[in-house]
Image: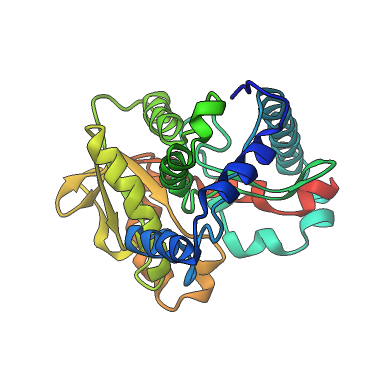
Length: 296
């Protein structure tokens, strides 16, 4: 975005927001819109104010450079631990023991993390990284909120004072999914399955937004409990159809925490070990989310 006056984007937004006289009813409407769209974190709306995060071009490039640096360092640290069992034991203790061979399985593609995110706290001194999550979570909820705040920007006249370029996640998500599938050796348009244990009901709405976006772009995607997936005739299958891309939407530690989940994962285990499915959230990537890597 670029301005036509001396105020910062935040100052301009606050001034226009105050001048528009939006009321508590508008805040209530914002919350209800999010509930209707499934934009919740637990039982709370993702956004509880009428103020979006606004980044100027230099801030965006700074954040991108920071993200590249942090993720690159985490990847190198994780690879170092994979090569040095003694060092891994020193930093990770018995953490690796609970996963058996899952952390060492080759997913069949070179990327160390396909769908992942950095949790970052914005501060006056710049962004501070809290943790790295190598699972998708509600990765597309930001796009829905971006659409909402673009409507607010039009209503208060912010778009008349600034050139706005929305930061949308979905185009990159779709491209990453397909490129990883191609690198794995897949051809054509795959069936994508998001494996969500039925116990994780709060995950359904955020993932459904991703599925809807994939469907609108011409790809077939579904949510399935791991127990609905079976390894048969050399492929991972859901309702008899061959699964091309599998997205694991749960942490490996949940395998021990959710009763019966390990048994329901047998089809996935067999397909991954046979290299019969492109699992873009490979078990191997779990190590990237371990906070000990920051210390290393």
